[in-house]
Image (cartoon, rainbow, N blue to C red; front, side, top):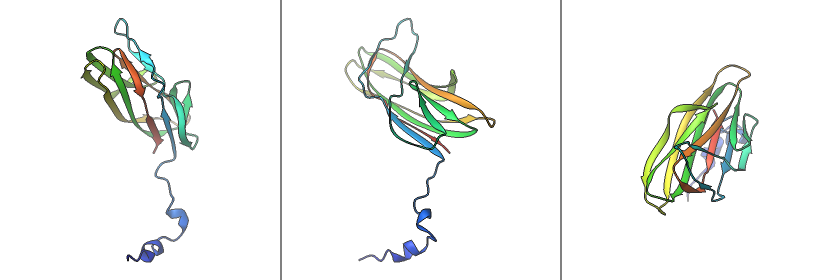
Length: 155
């Protein structure tokens, strides 16, 4: 048998064991099976969906987008799971306040009726004391959205 008592004695209080590594977080998912049809090569915004977990006040869901409140850095980790309706490229891109986040995009070429996973990870920043920003994600390509889980944490 293992003796775990020395491990717990190294903590001065139980509070230290449960300390969170971020100030605020939100976990959303959109699993509605929405169909996206792109016309004239104009990307379509994908709504973030229902809130599954959330704590703190610095990251909020706002009408299909995520609002990041206050100055600091925000870790974005999301994945679009889609099924293309026709063979061809599918592009997903992250935006902050309507501007593309540099490097936060992915393009994959898929076959019709074969699921694709489009992961996007990014670190975005809000400058200043009273600044807020809005995160949105767009998709370019005709497909069905199977699932869109996203986690945004204020570091």
